[in-house]
Amino acid sequence: MNTTPALMISSIAEVKAQMLSSLCGNDFDEAHDFDGLFSQALLSQIPDMKNVTVGVLSSLIKPVATQTSLHTGRNIALADPESAYRMMTLINNKDVLYKAQFFELSRMGDEVARMQQAGQHLGDVKMDADDIKAGLQDFTSQYNNWVSSFEPDMQGNGLLAGTQAAQLSRYELEQSVRYRFNGVSEGLHGLADLGITVLPGGKLALDDAKLDGMLSSNPKGAVATVHEFGTNFAKAAELLNADNNFIPNQLDNLDRAIHYIDQNHAAWQVEFGTGAVAKPAGQVAQALAAYNRTTRI
Image (cartoon, rainbow, N blue to C red):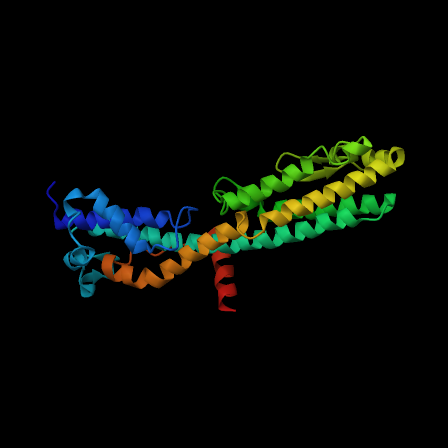
């Protein structure tokens, strides 16, 4: 294959764009630097360059900073400035997105911790019908507020729609509510027998009449069911926030990606041009502003 400077520069831009998009994946190893991974990927993509050292490669393609057009965001010294422009535009947008996602997922972690406390309260609730009813009403209200708070983020195009940690958090807590073996030793089948159902969309509904009937006919079973549910729900919520689990792992990945971009962004702009400036709107803009406020504290 005939390797030209234009091919080399275009390949560099394409490979770096692909590598950056994988920064937040679980397979990213912080023990290896991004430029090292990028060099390996590039050399494997262009067979004729396998005997070219990274130092020689850098000297061949290093553009002159003064040849960057600030007006267009493109480095006109490059043989293929458009590929580099697209890559830097992607980086600019990813930088904004990762910061917004970091703030929202952090907020979700805090709210999951509050739901853990709500579950613990039910696990410790007194063996009194009025306390049981008040506890379930309060739990239902807190749970629904939690669902509502993140509902926009979880939609198809929402900020956390593609974030596995957020999706699994919602799923695991909902499954805890649906679990039908709490209270089985006392003849009940979970919160459903106490009048709590999961509505389409994920919110809870409490049938007071059904709950009153069960508290009257089987108070011991009702208390046992609530205690078991509260304890198990709290454990599920705690696990989501536990070290090396869903939420902390994703936050760590996002944080590493954010800091890597921050440390290298200026050098990339010199090498490839500035790209198009990110213009966040809606959920992304709000979460980004909140992220910037918290990181300045």
